[in-house]
Length: 365
Image (cartoon, rainbow, N blue to C red; front, side):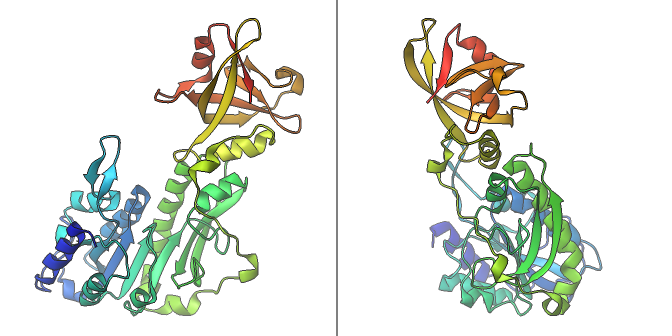
């Protein structure tokens, strides 16, 4: 366990159980009348869920309170590489939540962390993109179980990258599921789900934000049944025969191969937006069509070319029309590249980049 994590846990154990973990906006209702809930999450999308829980718990008749928050330890973030708390931890601090009740174990199976969790005596735990495996010892602690918000229609896309893999596959519909957590990956009984149509222009970060926003609403709607135990009876087992996996994305996957059809490449650009992004190498040709050098571009925004193939450059040549670079792709298709980024530079539109070539042209590699 990191020193900052251990310090938080030690300090917590010195506190009396009469200390209220409420945020500055919470009600003055005695905490003893509310069921303690522990929230686990780390990235910015998790803060959306935490915000909904804070707001719901602040009402006078709320049956629960957020007793503690579990998140990833502070880490080096942003270009400055400063050691910063996770987005969820920072959001909680900004809301006035006690720093003593923000727990940051390296692993959720650490004995000291589990000791502290048992001392909190939570009735239920809620997870939303926590980013840590929960062992059986953890799952046995809350009597009403641990519930996860997962951004897919389970049993589809179980795993670390459900939104990215769904977009990469070009799905027309996805959603968010509320399910009990079991030891098997995202395989617990589903309490409720919400479907959502997928626009072929939306990028993964935007869809992820949307689904966690919808997931927070779904959670608040289902909280009464979760807290009175009736959700366990109505939750439906997943159909294992329909299960698919959404493995973690690697940086090596970011390269585009223009032998694939344009629609597959467009979906990949949308899926990998943010991190790791998508990249391609092009040959830069001079006015005599002699190869000058090779440049690497990050492909930011694209669309599938709806024009006839004759609009596109012949062979491997890239042309420019209607504000887009037209890249020949497999199956006689073409990809319109609308925004690009050179290494170390800002994102620019295709027109600005094309004008900067000063008469030189590009060929795909």
